[in-house]
Length: 114
Ligand code: SF4
Ligand code: F3S
Image 1 (cartoon, helix red, strand yellow):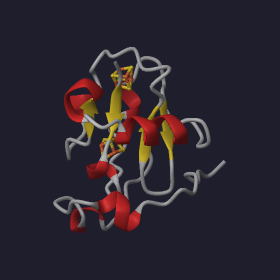
Image 2: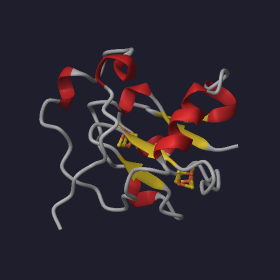
Image 3: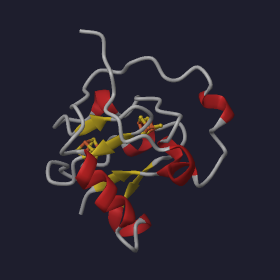
Image 4: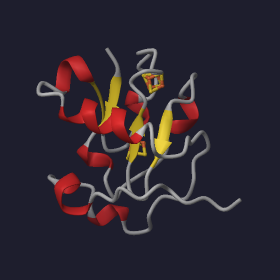
């Protein structure tokens, strides 16, 4: 079992989740985050931290494995993130939208100031 980041995170990217993870298993894309399923210890601490409920337990909310595949893949190509950055200024415009992954997802890695 693992926890996963899902559609609600796309273009919202609050990043409240990253600072509570005891094993630092979040990875950052341009407009989305993922969890490394290989490293997640299923503690569940991050789940209530997300203001838009984007984090789910795979056994409960990922019946066809879609989000497991996405999280596992991008955890291998994006940079690790452990400190909250500045969320997108227009995140409020996207909080209630669904199907955001198909519409807006960027495969580019997150960019941080050195
Ligand atoms: Fe990290 Fe725990 Fe969330 Fe897994 S469930 S990503 S170990 S905080
Ligand atoms: Fe995304 Fe929620 Fe974390 S919007 S960045 S999963 S706090």
